Amino acid sequence: MTRPQRFLLRWGVLLALVTWWQLVTAAIDHPYFPPPLEILAAARQMWFSGSASTLFLSQDALDSLLPSIGRLLGGWWLAVLAGVVLGTALGLSRRLLDYTGPVFAFFRSLPLPALVPVFVLLCRLGSQMVVAVILFGAVWAVLLNTVDGVHTVDRVQLDTARAFQIPAVRRLVGIVLPAALPKIFAGLRVSLSQSVTLMVVAELFAANGGLGGELQDARDQFDFAQMWAVVVMVGVLGYTLNTVLLAVERRALAWHQAVEGGQLVDHA
Amino acid sequence: MSTMLELAGLRHVYRGGHAAVDSLSFTVDGGELSCIVGPSGCGKSTLLRAVAGLIAPTGGEVLLHGSPVRGVPEELAVVFQDYSRSLFPWLTVQSNVEFPLRGRATRAERRELAWSALKQVGLADAAHKHPQQLSGGMQQRVALARALAYRPALLLLDEPFASVDAQTRFELEDLLLRVHAEQGTTMLLVTHDIDESVYLGDRVLVLSSSPARLLADLPVHLPAERDQITTRESETFVELRTEVARLLRGVAAPVSVSP
View: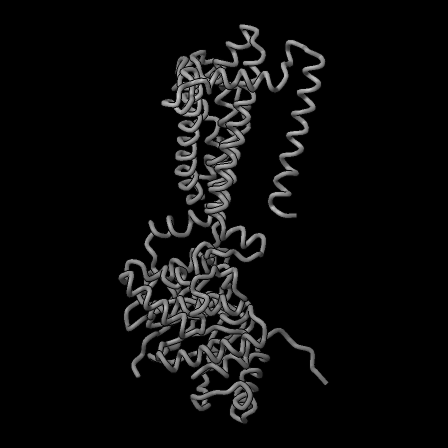
């Protein structure tokens, strides 16, 4: 199959599904289930009705959509940073790992949304609470995958580095981290989708705007088209971020895919 | 020639009491290609790791240029058996060869050293590929080029050709001999293949089964120029390989007598 054919087939199914949904919802005319076109109109009205100077973003988009994305990326980035740094330290030290392993296994097993009320108490309501929830919830996937990746670096590679007298810092940056990168990326993907979930859940509590806030408001005002628009927007946001991350991963791990898939990579 | 490497009563006992090497003493002269041959699992690799400073032996000493080895000595390179695990798959062939040179040579020098080493092993065309795009034999050439570019005074080879097919193995053996003749690097090569040890070595050190002790230190009286066919059928070669085989059979587990 050629590329355009694959593209058409994949998106064709989605398009058909939405069209069918449009026909059904228009026919039954139920207030809880507005037709997709109505949802789209609500979305455009809510976020994309601004002037050209703000790239057509409305005031509402600037006030809620962008801050949400900011908290999401900020919290996720902190989680990645903390997870990779701590995970590397733990992965390098067998003893530290033995002591801390059960603690991490426990925290990872906690259902993340259950933590939100705790954070509301600790951080009060506001952006810092949302960021803290994302950081604390998303850090484990990164941390544990990093530990795993660092821990399983091939001994022959490390011996090679030692035999060539490669200094510790360069061993870490030049060998341990690249070798652990496939596992780290697995952690990044999981933590990113967790971050989207946590952002919405935390914002439902935070009550200071953001997508979660808009979801709450729309429901309270029985504006179901707006409510669905927020749901769709969260989905689009998650999908877009994941796609970008996958593209970055494909570039960074081209060598790894060649190892796994056995096919040749052309870097021309 | 002067003594480069000296092992004095080397002994290594692993935790748990398994003695891998016991009271091993020999010297290696500068420029020599010495082959260490012994039965599988006899402690040859332990010996090599002790010489490389990767493990601290529990007894005896390794002296390099007369001074004891503590930690990994300067100007030493190792080629491991498992090329696929010793090369770095995220780097190109060229970068793999240059990697150990960072901090020791300028960018231009690194490029030049890597380039000439790759040319020496016949892989100049593959410089921009990744190791996993190459065959096993070619990957081991990359590992060899990486060691050569480092310009080691002592090159340790741990069963370097045990994981490639027979044809490639002959090619790599001849490549190693050519490099040795061109560069005069002191080499210590560990193998379990008797023929290989005789074909490659200026001398053959025969080890007993675990714990490894020195059974014999045999000079190889073959001409420096060797050939995979004529050398292997020469009388000297056959005599020597038979002698080594007898020595090894004497120490290995009892073998059923062939008719």
